[in-house]
Amino acid sequence: MNSNACNTKLISVIFFFISAGAHQNCDIDFDGSGGDIAHSWHTGNMHFDDDENFKAIYSPSVEGIYLLRVAVHEIGHVLGLNHTEKDHSVMYAIYNQDSSVDSEFELGWDDRKDVQKIYGVCRGAFNTVFDWVRRRPDNRFIFNTYFFRGNRYWMYENHANRTRYGDPLIISREWKGVPSDIDAYVHIWFYNHPGIVDVTYFFKGENYYMYESMEAKVLDGWPKKISEGFGPKPNGTDRIPNNVDSVFFDMRDSNIYFFKDDMVYVYNPRGEGAPSKTGCCERISKITDEFPAAKGERPLEGNLDAVYYSYKKQSMYFLKGEDVWRNSNFSRRQSPRKNTIRYEGKWYDHWYDICDVKSDTSATSGMINYAGD
Ligand SMILES: [Ca+2]
Ligand SMILES: [Ca+2]
Ligand SMILES: [Zn+2]
Ligand SMILES: [Zn+2]
Image 1 (cartoon, protein in one colour):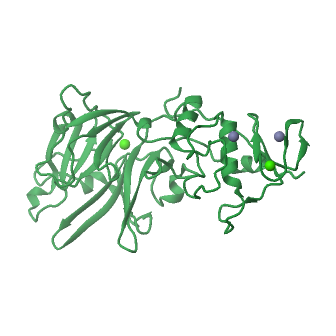
Image 2 (spheres, rainbow, N blue to C red; image 1 turned 90 degrees about the vertical axis):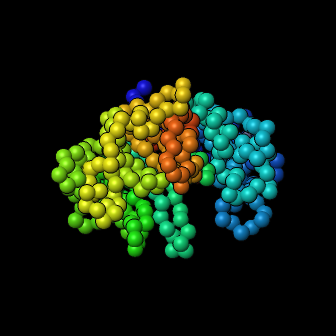
Image 3 (cartoon, rainbow, N blue to C red; image 1 turned 120 degrees about the horizontal axis):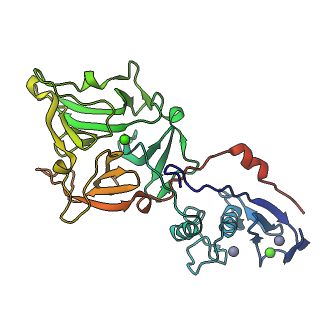
């Protein structure tokens, strides 16, 4: 298997709405209103009983049957799923009239696990992974986890353990000015008398880009050179290298950690009014010295793809290829910092179904066929 590719298989479904009686050379007849609602064939043909009172998702009527819920159930069959004993699942054999709109319209995690047993999991490496945090107009913070690969990205909705419907999207369309194949992302956020420093950067090659989250674009006048923005201390020669692997802002000490190969460069962005403190670096260490593994654990490796703080899991994560490590004693306010690294297995066992699907809408629309009796 190509390391950056998922097993993708295009499955087409065709909807037929059919009245009572024999139909389509199908050996199951419908029975008028009530009773059987729909059935489907593994080839993708889905037959719906046209004598049922189907309704749309946002229908105000309490009467009727959600067509989408029935369709998702039938699509589950087309994918190869059988009925489940779990009555909360959309794959339960009997349509539940009381089912809520929110929770019952998609395949649940149990169902998705079963689909993975048939088709396998999506795999591959990422350029970077990060939580993008924004302040809403009501001052509440919202965040989701973003996975960038090549020229596309996924937004991962942690509450539902899946990517947003329709992802991946093209980076250049949604993140104005951000290039493909980026090296790293960092959100730097600390109190610096008399105000807050709150900046977001993307890194690629010898450049870095300041990103304005409220306007969702790279600011005018950017990118700039890493060598100019993160150069040496006065009289020093050490500098932050180009082509970094990953960048992490540590809220525990308000330093920026630049990862490259098997080294980490600790950069103090605060200055503290003392010019000698500004510049590269507080220290330059081996990654495994700065972030040692717990006893007997598989240590961190060099050439990391991503290092980021997960607001959902409240921990610091490291990704390389398909492997994941976690800083197991991390807490946001601890001082001194405690770093104890544990290997956590593959990313696809923590984040589910980040799949390289091609959304070819022209092909899809041609296949959906609404047929009457
Ligand atoms: Ca019926
Ligand atoms: Ca990277
Ligand atoms: Zn039929
Ligand atoms: Zn069924």
